[in-house]
Figure: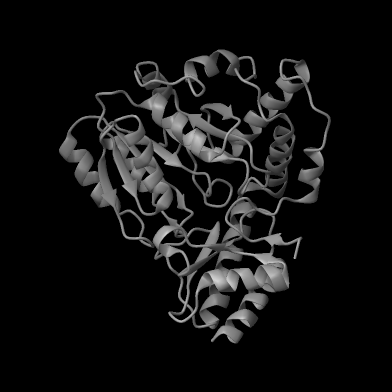
Length: 359
Protein backbone atom coordinates (compact mmCIF):
# COMPACT_ATOMS: atom_id res chain seq x y z
CA UNK A 1 0.00 0.00 0.00
CA UNK A 2 1.51 3.28 -1.15
CA UNK A 3 -0.44 5.47 1.26
CA UNK A 4 -0.61 4.79 4.97
CA UNK A 5 -1.44 6.63 8.18
CA UNK A 6 1.38 7.20 10.62
CA UNK A 7 0.90 5.94 14.16
CA UNK A 8 4.62 6.19 14.79
CA UNK A 9 6.07 8.26 17.65
CA UNK A 10 7.46 10.83 15.22
CA UNK A 11 7.14 11.97 12.61
CA UNK A 12 3.41 12.00 13.20
CA UNK A 13 0.38 12.30 10.93
CA UNK A 14 0.34 16.04 10.11
CA UNK A 15 -3.09 17.74 9.87
CA UNK A 16 -4.11 19.07 6.46
CA UNK A 17 -4.37 22.69 7.61
CA UNK A 18 -0.74 22.55 8.76
CA UNK A 19 0.47 20.89 5.55
CA UNK A 20 -1.30 23.61 3.60
CA UNK A 21 0.71 26.25 5.46
CA UNK A 22 3.99 24.59 4.43
CA UNK A 23 3.11 25.04 0.75
CA UNK A 24 3.24 28.83 0.99
CA UNK A 25 5.75 30.65 -1.26
CA UNK A 26 9.33 30.83 0.01
CA UNK A 27 10.29 34.01 1.85
CA UNK A 28 13.74 35.56 1.89
CA UNK A 29 14.97 34.89 5.43
CA UNK A 30 16.44 38.38 5.84
CA UNK A 31 13.16 40.00 4.88
CA UNK A 32 10.72 41.53 7.37
CA UNK A 33 8.01 38.91 6.82
CA UNK A 34 10.29 36.12 8.00
CA UNK A 35 11.37 38.18 10.99
CA UNK A 36 7.71 38.46 11.96
CA UNK A 37 7.14 34.74 11.37
CA UNK A 38 10.04 33.65 13.57
CA UNK A 39 9.23 36.17 16.31
CA UNK A 40 5.56 35.14 16.49
CA UNK A 41 6.47 31.44 16.48
CA UNK A 42 8.93 31.90 19.35
CA UNK A 43 6.51 33.89 21.51
CA UNK A 44 3.68 31.39 21.02
CA UNK A 45 5.99 28.43 21.62
CA UNK A 46 6.99 29.91 24.98
CA UNK A 47 3.38 29.51 26.11
CA UNK A 48 3.48 25.76 25.44
CA UNK A 49 6.85 25.46 27.18
CA UNK A 50 5.73 27.68 30.09
CA UNK A 51 9.01 29.49 29.61
CA UNK A 52 10.45 33.00 29.55
CA UNK A 53 13.80 31.78 28.25
CA UNK A 54 15.65 32.41 25.01
CA UNK A 55 14.56 30.13 22.15
CA UNK A 56 17.08 29.19 19.48
CA UNK A 57 15.83 27.48 16.31
CA UNK A 58 17.91 25.13 14.15
CA UNK A 59 17.38 23.60 10.69
CA UNK A 60 18.04 20.10 12.03
CA UNK A 61 16.51 17.07 13.66
CA UNK A 62 16.09 16.92 17.42
CA UNK A 63 19.56 15.38 17.69
CA UNK A 64 21.02 18.60 16.30
CA UNK A 65 19.38 20.57 19.11
CA UNK A 66 20.71 18.03 21.62
CA UNK A 67 24.21 18.58 20.26
CA UNK A 68 23.70 22.35 20.46
CA UNK A 69 22.72 22.01 24.13
CA UNK A 70 25.68 19.74 24.89
CA UNK A 71 28.37 21.71 23.05
CA UNK A 72 27.26 25.08 24.44
CA UNK A 73 26.64 24.19 28.11
CA UNK A 74 29.75 22.04 28.69
CA UNK A 75 33.44 22.81 28.99
CA UNK A 76 36.42 20.45 28.81
CA UNK A 77 36.82 20.23 32.59
CA UNK A 78 33.14 19.41 33.27
CA UNK A 79 31.99 16.02 34.53
CA UNK A 80 28.26 15.94 33.78
CA UNK A 81 25.73 13.34 34.87
CA UNK A 82 23.74 11.45 32.23
CA UNK A 83 20.53 9.77 33.42
CA UNK A 84 19.51 7.07 30.92
CA UNK A 85 16.43 4.87 30.58
CA UNK A 86 16.50 4.15 26.84
CA UNK A 87 18.08 4.76 23.46
CA UNK A 88 17.56 8.52 23.44
CA UNK A 89 19.06 8.91 26.89
CA UNK A 90 22.03 7.02 25.50
CA UNK A 91 22.30 9.72 22.84
CA UNK A 92 23.31 12.22 25.52
CA UNK A 93 26.11 9.82 26.46
CA UNK A 94 27.19 9.51 22.82
CA UNK A 95 27.27 13.30 22.45
CA UNK A 96 29.42 13.70 25.55
CA UNK A 97 31.84 11.08 24.23
CA UNK A 98 31.99 12.86 20.87
CA UNK A 99 33.40 15.89 22.71
CA UNK A 100 35.75 13.75 24.84
CA UNK A 101 33.69 14.45 27.95
CA UNK A 102 33.48 11.58 30.47
CA UNK A 103 30.19 11.75 32.38
CA UNK A 104 28.88 9.91 35.41
CA UNK A 105 26.17 7.57 34.12
CA UNK A 106 22.90 6.51 35.76
CA UNK A 107 21.52 3.59 33.75
CA UNK A 108 18.05 2.11 34.22
CA UNK A 109 16.68 -1.00 32.50
CA UNK A 110 14.54 -0.40 29.43
CA UNK A 111 10.98 0.28 30.52
CA UNK A 112 12.02 1.76 33.85
CA UNK A 113 12.13 5.47 34.65
CA UNK A 114 15.15 7.06 36.33
CA UNK A 115 14.72 7.18 40.10
CA UNK A 116 15.18 10.70 41.54
CA UNK A 117 17.04 9.40 44.60
CA UNK A 118 19.81 8.06 42.35
CA UNK A 119 20.27 11.53 40.90
CA UNK A 120 20.31 13.13 44.34
CA UNK A 121 22.89 10.66 45.61
CA UNK A 122 25.30 11.55 42.81
CA UNK A 123 24.77 15.32 42.92
CA UNK A 124 25.20 15.28 46.70
CA UNK A 125 28.41 13.28 46.41
CA UNK A 126 29.85 15.61 43.77
CA UNK A 127 29.27 18.54 46.14
CA UNK A 128 29.53 21.13 43.37
CA UNK A 129 27.23 22.40 40.59
CA UNK A 130 27.20 20.08 37.58
CA UNK A 131 25.21 19.48 34.42
CA UNK A 132 22.51 16.79 34.38
CA UNK A 133 21.34 15.41 31.02
CA UNK A 134 18.14 13.38 30.82
CA UNK A 135 14.95 12.72 28.85
CA UNK A 136 11.35 13.73 29.46
CA UNK A 137 9.69 11.09 27.28
CA UNK A 138 11.91 8.16 26.31
CA UNK A 139 10.61 7.40 22.82
CA UNK A 140 12.32 4.01 22.61
CA UNK A 141 10.41 2.57 25.59
CA UNK A 142 7.53 4.99 26.27
CA UNK A 143 8.83 5.72 29.79
CA UNK A 144 8.18 9.11 31.39
CA UNK A 145 10.74 10.60 33.77
CA UNK A 146 9.93 12.67 36.86
CA UNK A 147 11.37 15.95 35.58
CA UNK A 148 9.73 17.93 38.37
CA UNK A 149 11.73 16.02 41.00
CA UNK A 150 14.88 16.18 38.87
CA UNK A 151 14.48 19.97 38.72
CA UNK A 152 14.01 20.32 42.47
CA UNK A 153 17.12 18.22 43.10
CA UNK A 154 19.17 20.12 40.53
CA UNK A 155 18.17 23.45 42.06
CA UNK A 156 19.05 22.17 45.56
CA UNK A 157 22.62 21.45 44.46
CA UNK A 158 22.99 24.43 42.12
CA UNK A 159 23.22 22.18 39.07
CA UNK A 160 21.95 22.63 35.51
CA UNK A 161 19.13 20.41 34.21
CA UNK A 162 19.14 19.71 30.45
CA UNK A 163 16.10 17.79 29.15
CA UNK A 164 15.40 16.12 25.81
CA UNK A 165 11.72 16.98 25.44
CA UNK A 166 11.44 16.16 21.73
CA UNK A 167 8.71 13.53 22.14
CA UNK A 168 7.11 14.95 25.26
CA UNK A 169 6.58 18.64 24.52
CA UNK A 170 2.88 19.20 23.81
CA UNK A 171 1.88 15.74 25.07
CA UNK A 172 3.41 15.46 28.55
CA UNK A 173 3.12 18.41 30.94
CA UNK A 174 6.55 19.93 31.59
CA UNK A 175 6.51 23.61 32.61
CA UNK A 176 10.11 24.59 32.01
CA UNK A 177 10.49 27.53 34.38
CA UNK A 178 8.48 26.10 37.28
CA UNK A 179 10.32 22.76 37.11
CA UNK A 180 13.78 24.43 36.93
CA UNK A 181 14.71 23.03 33.52
CA UNK A 182 17.68 25.03 32.27
CA UNK A 183 17.63 23.83 28.66
CA UNK A 184 14.61 22.13 27.11
CA UNK A 185 15.16 20.49 23.72
CA UNK A 186 12.32 20.14 21.21
CA UNK A 187 11.50 19.58 17.54
CA UNK A 188 8.68 20.21 15.10
CA UNK A 189 7.68 16.68 14.09
CA UNK A 190 5.99 15.21 17.14
CA UNK A 191 3.22 16.62 19.37
CA UNK A 192 3.68 20.06 17.79
CA UNK A 193 2.14 18.42 14.70
CA UNK A 194 4.48 19.77 12.02
CA UNK A 195 6.74 18.12 9.44
CA UNK A 196 10.36 17.39 10.39
CA UNK A 197 12.95 20.08 9.78
CA UNK A 198 13.05 22.40 12.79
CA UNK A 199 14.50 21.77 16.23
CA UNK A 200 15.01 24.22 19.07
CA UNK A 201 16.34 24.75 22.55
CA UNK A 202 14.74 26.95 25.19
CA UNK A 203 17.51 28.28 27.45
CA UNK A 204 17.18 29.76 30.93
CA UNK A 205 19.08 32.92 31.84
CA UNK A 206 21.51 31.10 34.16
CA UNK A 207 22.20 28.45 31.55
CA UNK A 208 22.82 31.10 28.91
CA UNK A 209 25.37 32.72 31.21
CA UNK A 210 27.16 29.37 31.55
CA UNK A 211 27.29 28.97 27.75
CA UNK A 212 29.51 32.08 27.59
CA UNK A 213 32.34 30.19 29.30
CA UNK A 214 32.04 26.98 27.25
CA UNK A 215 35.31 26.03 25.56
CA UNK A 216 34.11 23.09 23.45
CA UNK A 217 34.53 23.45 19.66
CA UNK A 218 31.41 24.45 17.72
CA UNK A 219 30.47 26.45 14.68
CA UNK A 220 27.02 25.77 13.19
CA UNK A 221 25.47 25.41 16.67
CA UNK A 222 27.43 28.23 18.34
CA UNK A 223 24.94 30.16 20.49
CA UNK A 224 27.19 33.20 20.46
CA UNK A 225 26.36 33.52 16.76
CA UNK A 226 22.71 32.65 17.28
CA UNK A 227 22.15 35.22 20.02
CA UNK A 228 23.25 38.08 17.75
CA UNK A 229 20.53 37.08 15.30
CA UNK A 230 17.94 35.93 17.84
CA UNK A 231 17.55 39.47 19.20
CA UNK A 232 16.55 40.50 15.66
CA UNK A 233 14.20 37.48 15.26
CA UNK A 234 16.48 35.88 12.70
CA UNK A 235 18.87 32.93 12.45
CA UNK A 236 22.54 33.08 11.46
CA UNK A 237 22.11 30.39 8.80
CA UNK A 238 19.34 29.68 6.29
CA UNK A 239 16.32 28.34 8.25
CA UNK A 240 13.70 25.76 7.23
CA UNK A 241 11.41 28.56 6.06
CA UNK A 242 8.30 26.66 4.96
CA UNK A 243 8.39 24.40 8.04
CA UNK A 244 8.15 27.54 10.18
CA UNK A 245 4.73 28.19 8.67
CA UNK A 246 3.64 24.72 9.68
CA UNK A 247 5.18 24.91 13.15
CA UNK A 248 3.49 28.24 13.84
CA UNK A 249 0.13 26.80 12.75
CA UNK A 250 0.64 23.68 14.88
CA UNK A 251 1.38 25.80 17.93
CA UNK A 252 -1.63 28.01 17.21
CA UNK A 253 -3.87 24.94 16.96
CA UNK A 254 -2.72 23.75 20.39
CA UNK A 255 -3.25 27.18 21.94
CA UNK A 256 -6.70 27.36 20.37
CA UNK A 257 -7.64 24.02 21.94
CA UNK A 258 -6.24 25.26 25.27
CA UNK A 259 -3.20 23.84 27.01
CA UNK A 260 -5.09 22.02 29.78
CA UNK A 261 -7.49 20.43 27.31
CA UNK A 262 -4.63 19.51 24.99
CA UNK A 263 -2.79 17.62 27.75
CA UNK A 264 -6.03 15.98 28.90
CA UNK A 265 -6.75 14.82 25.34
CA UNK A 266 -3.36 13.12 25.19
CA UNK A 267 -3.96 11.48 28.56
CA UNK A 268 -7.36 10.17 27.44
CA UNK A 269 -5.91 8.70 24.23
CA UNK A 270 -3.06 7.09 26.16
CA UNK A 271 -5.43 5.55 28.71
CA UNK A 272 -7.73 4.29 25.95
CA UNK A 273 -4.86 2.65 24.04
CA UNK A 274 -3.58 0.91 27.16
CA UNK A 275 -6.99 -0.39 28.18
CA UNK A 276 -7.50 -1.83 24.71
CA UNK A 277 -4.09 -3.50 24.78
CA UNK A 278 -4.74 -5.00 28.21
CA UNK A 279 -8.02 -6.41 26.86
CA UNK A 280 -5.92 -8.15 24.20
CA UNK A 281 -4.09 -9.70 27.17
CA UNK A 282 -0.84 -8.00 26.27
CA UNK A 283 1.53 -6.07 28.54
CA UNK A 284 2.62 -2.45 28.51
CA UNK A 285 6.41 -2.07 28.63
CA UNK A 286 7.07 1.03 30.81
CA UNK A 287 6.17 1.20 34.49
CA UNK A 288 5.44 4.93 34.24
CA UNK A 289 4.22 5.55 30.67
CA UNK A 290 4.17 8.79 28.71
CA UNK A 291 1.01 10.23 27.18
CA UNK A 292 2.80 10.63 23.84
CA UNK A 293 2.98 6.94 22.92
CA UNK A 294 2.05 3.48 24.08
CA UNK A 295 4.63 0.69 23.98
CA UNK A 296 3.38 -2.90 24.15
CA UNK A 297 5.31 -6.13 24.59
CA UNK A 298 4.83 -8.86 22.00
CA UNK A 299 4.02 -12.48 22.90
CA UNK A 300 7.14 -14.65 22.70
CA UNK A 301 5.94 -16.45 19.57
CA UNK A 302 5.15 -13.29 17.57
CA UNK A 303 7.69 -10.94 16.00
CA UNK A 304 6.60 -7.30 15.87
CA UNK A 305 8.41 -6.81 12.54
CA UNK A 306 5.97 -9.22 10.87
CA UNK A 307 2.92 -7.60 12.50
CA UNK A 308 3.97 -4.07 11.57
CA UNK A 309 4.63 -5.07 7.95
CA UNK A 310 1.23 -6.78 7.61
CA UNK A 311 -0.64 -3.85 9.15
CA UNK A 312 1.03 -1.42 6.76
CA UNK A 313 0.42 -3.53 3.66
CA UNK A 314 -3.15 -4.63 4.40
CA UNK A 315 -4.63 -1.85 6.54
CA UNK A 316 -2.58 1.22 5.67
CA UNK A 317 -1.53 1.70 9.28
CA UNK A 318 2.09 2.10 10.34
CA UNK A 319 3.24 1.47 13.90
CA UNK A 320 6.90 1.61 14.97
CA UNK A 321 9.17 -1.29 15.82
CA UNK A 322 11.51 -1.47 18.76
CA UNK A 323 15.08 -0.22 18.48
CA UNK A 324 18.29 -2.10 19.21
CA UNK A 325 17.70 -5.06 21.51
CA UNK A 326 13.95 -4.36 21.53
CA UNK A 327 13.52 -4.77 17.76
CA UNK A 328 10.95 -7.46 17.06
CA UNK A 329 9.89 -7.54 20.72
CA UNK A 330 7.67 -4.45 21.05
CA UNK A 331 5.31 -2.24 19.08
CA UNK A 332 5.35 1.51 19.64
CA UNK A 333 2.06 3.29 18.98
CA UNK A 334 2.28 7.05 18.63
CA UNK A 335 -0.80 9.08 19.59
CA UNK A 336 0.61 12.56 19.99
CA UNK A 337 -0.88 15.52 18.15
CA UNK A 338 -3.26 14.78 15.28
CA UNK A 339 -5.14 11.82 16.75
CA UNK A 340 -8.45 11.09 18.46
CA UNK A 341 -10.17 8.09 20.04
CA UNK A 342 -12.04 7.16 16.85
CA UNK A 343 -8.85 7.18 14.77
CA UNK A 344 -6.98 5.24 17.44
CA UNK A 345 -9.83 2.75 17.76
CA UNK A 346 -9.65 1.89 14.06
CA UNK A 347 -5.90 1.29 14.24
CA UNK A 348 -6.20 -0.88 17.35
CA UNK A 349 -8.99 -2.93 15.77
CA UNK A 350 -6.67 -3.69 12.86
CA UNK A 351 -3.89 -4.60 15.28
CA UNK A 352 -6.20 -6.93 17.18
CA UNK A 353 -7.20 -8.68 13.95
CA UNK A 354 -3.60 -9.27 12.82
CA UNK A 355 -2.53 -10.53 16.24
CA UNK A 356 -5.45 -12.93 16.32
CA UNK A 357 -4.28 -14.44 13.03
CA UNK A 358 -0.69 -14.67 14.27
CA UNK A 359 -1.53 -16.49 17.49
